Length: 442
Image (cartoon, rainbow, N blue to C red; front, top):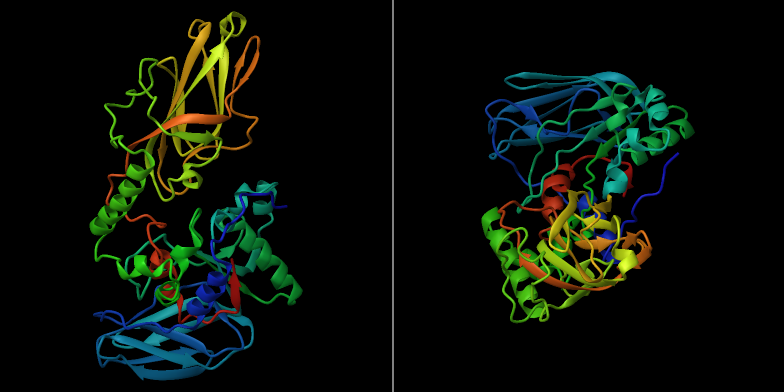
């Protein structure tokens, strides 16, 4: 059975419907010419085509080249346009298979083991990306995954500034113990139940989920431009990744400078602000646990230092202790009285760092955490009861205000999937707009 995961939060419920409608209804723009005829990347051996609908097939060839497509004894012909793109519709078909789909141009393409049944797009965040092998009793579920009429393909992750016309060739796989461990768990259970309820009809899943993705990045340009909050970002999208990264850093810097007025975005080194002699009197505060995006630093990634002083009795300072921080999004390097006690990367991994005997002292003690956030939420998070210093003489709570300072912003020119609206639509939905689907699970 499935186990609970982090919920998905949509910033604008109405936009979800607009995005899906735009996704399913828009038409595909022309793509580049190709030396030899080829099919769009979504087509491949072992795929499922949607039943009871005209079967749309498309691809690219030399401009003006004649293309014929044959399937189940039916053939349709067309000619590649000036840009090399060709498209045609085959007659609707009932469920069944396996069949061959043959494309004949100057070259011949044969897709084998093609089924006709129900075809669904599975998208969203980590809930949908979550692999079958990772569910409760995952080993048994994978071992029982001999379902040859269930087919699955996973799109490569692509965040693009402009809509892409095509994908790299996808790999379709039939469900079996050898393949199903990597399938989307939610989509797999959905497909099993759907196939069973329809009397064994083949079910295909096109999985293009991306963990942690914001709804805005899945929005079509049309939907985004119609939204007053997103439209400025889409209109200002630059032509290349370096320009987008610079644009994003400038927005972050302005937000940080307003939040920590008079304090530069800088640090002297990875231990610069770990010690007890650092003057943090002018630093603003963040409530922890709690991500800083919710506290005036929305959309800010990079390095943030958190510092908190705790007063200990002689009994509490005696002996070893354990520093419990809860979870840190994404990476931490943690210090007690200027000495490193632990650190790792993993937004959903609880931090429990041993504090050796002799490091604590009676009176004031300084706990410092250097947090590196690579995207999405940043900071300490989890239940308020978890952050604490567990000493031999009892626990000292650490929830509440921490002194905080932004030390660095991302330096990379990499385009992150949440850096702007429309990026995942451009890279992972736009190439699928012509694909005939029964529906979407999100």
